[in-house]
Image (cartoon, rainbow, N blue to C red):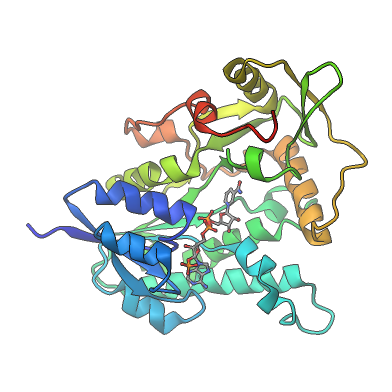
Length: 330
Ligand SMILES: NC(=O)c1ccc[n+]([C@@H]2O[C@H](COP(=O)([O-])OP(=O)(O)OC[C@H]3O[C@@H](n4cnc5c(N)ncnc54)[C@H](OP(=O)(O)O)[C@@H]3O)[C@@H](O)[C@H]2O)c1
């Protein structure tokens, strides 16, 4: 029997790259990876590993229909922050429109384009669509500036209403909190050393709030494969461990052999260089996690990994910490 085809949006990125890694290991599947630039070093690397690299742009519906042709499965992801931080987009908002509002519309349209294109692939068996919690809805209007969550959630609302046949073949994947945020996002958790030599991990988050912590590059593919192998209709929150900051700090200090504690986020944190909309989105999403849960715990459609009935070979947070280079903090 000839192998089945998975088409991977964002194949050169973190989520899509993980999906590529997982499916390349399975001889029952061949992999087509989409990128805007088929001659980049990342695209070339994918080709040498046996990926069919195809040009497509999430903003161009016809390129998606062509790239999805013949797919048995599709994984799709949209990238809010890439568009937000791209200087080419800074002049695009209409008069009176904030950039973040423009990117919301832009990412939502990209999600709709994926769903419209996937609905035109007759033999498609499964779409796995990367989304996040509908923050404005599940906070009942309290938090309305977390545009990078709501844009993805609104695309899901669109897909459910506009494409009922496609919806019978679709599962949603919600990526958990990237563990790499500890290394790359001081706006979320800041790591400093105090006079007594104790490491202070500062966050606005309540240290007891549990987060779905995920090693995105290692874990995403395993979850997507499970969603392809099981019945559709899932809305899966993904994580290797459901862990609070307090618990993370305990493991972190044990692995690194240092003393560490949680401290309140400094009022004088230098936000310079962080766009004001990003600051507001960060403050609101952390408050949302504290009050309503990262995945929106009131959303009855949310599934957890244990609900899949598939044993996933995930690592631990401790293993992830051991593999990272923390030298610039130490
Ligand atoms: N940080 C967190 O804790 C967290 C948690 C959950 C979800 N997220 C979400 O994760 C998303 C980013 O995913 P990621 O980490 O995989 O991103 P990434 O590593 O930055 O990769 C982005 C991918 O998207 C592709 N891409 C971007 N614009 C495109 C376009 N117009 N057409 C086609 N492809 C396009 C890029 O491909 P080319 O450049 O090769 O074209 C690249 O492969 C964001 O929307 C963010 O909100 C983040």
